[in-house]
Image (tube, rainbow, N blue to C red; front, side, top):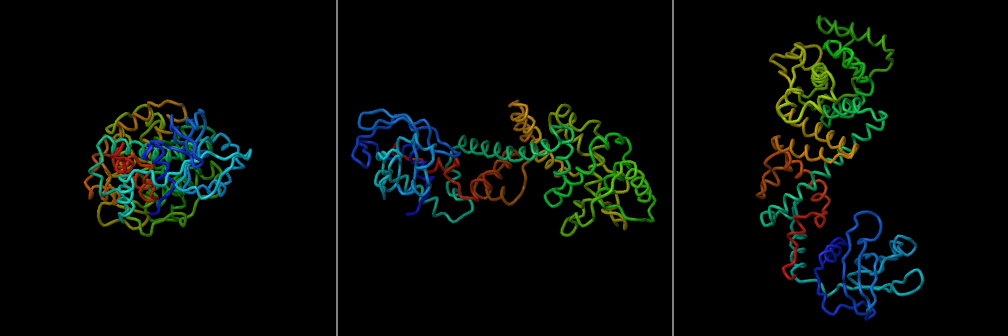
Length: 431
């Protein structure tokens, strides 16, 4: 059967092979004292291993390959990071490997030694034609294993999102207020318009909007104008007022190059998600929060407080408009919906908390993220429904975000053997 190197790494890590009377390919007696620590970055696969070869104790690293010849293919011989390898573990020793000094590299060949039930469990997973390769055994995995896998995937997902925030922070010269403001705009773009929203935030510094936060029409005028979404003229009094206000502030702040309408995506977007509606809602949030960063980081601790901060109503014009011009025949918007509010807590608040904790090395923010996500309802998308159809239902956003992380980072790229659930299902009964 075919298998990848990560399968052999798993076999070595958990010692899923016969160890009685072990010998190297050169016939030297081999005893394993310490497997070593699995290295997920560059360098040997296992660090700080301890083995006894022909009565001599060796401290160093272990490198794992399917074929011994891959040592040469991967150019390990010329890499100083591999000078401390004390054992080469391979499936098949198809060629002799030498150290840099010309002496033979101690090599363990695993062919014929791996436990039979390990092969069977691994084949069962590989043969399952599903985008959830371990779906057949999800119910068999212990609850504590599934929780541990979810938590790990959730942390990794928060790390990915927080890395984007820290990149914004670097671009603002470590200005957390401006960063929180720009990240809010990115999240309000909801994938389709996130890039354009981020660009708009860079065109209008947060400090300028703070000066006018008690005048909602001015906030709308500035943001709509810089977004390139204000019409040149209008017969609607409110829009006429916005045009005049924007012309004034454009001259005051010497703005020369606003965005254009083609920067924004309207086609295929539900009217409630139109950029005009979202910018109106953003204006209301900024008008409602005296200090955005303080409101998110200090004044709000639970879902109820974020509901108060984010669930605001835009100006009356947007009750019957989705964009400038023709009014809607029915009420267009009564404010931010509960579903959008929950998505903002998931995608805006918790990554910002996590990034803040990483930056200041305060791990308590991670626990705050976990607590908050457990207050938020689970998402309902094709990934969550996949897990649910196989008997694993998400109870809250902690679960659903973890499932999304599992699916995207492990299931889709078929990195099953790095997942604790798959490791549990493959676990040998022979040990």
